[in-house]
Length: 166
Image (cartoon, rainbow, N blue to C red):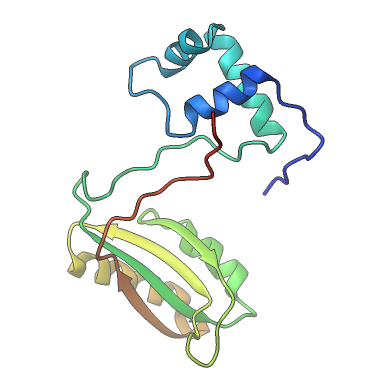
């Protein structure tokens, strides 16, 4: 992960661009053109400014955040794993590469109550399919895995990043 450069200077247009995009890109066929019109600059300048801020770590990413429920994935299970520390980096990469795992990351254990150190999110249309995919992960982890569980989502939480005032 890139670290933000505290020495970077943002001008008023950069700040207006951040404010204009922090709630998401405009939902139009040409969002950068829409932003350009709003900021009174060209779409090319919008793209250059965003790329510069990405390169310098001012913003970390531009990506889609799907509403899994709206697209039919109503069984969302965070699988949690107690994986041998000697193998977790290699196995975490392999689990994260599975086409049905949307994100995978390592976290420290919180013993004695929480033995899990690897997390892998699996989305599906039903819990049986999630369980089947988690069983595939268990096979991949093999003897390096001591225990696992599935934590299913029961509510939609709003996903937002840091917001700055306009």
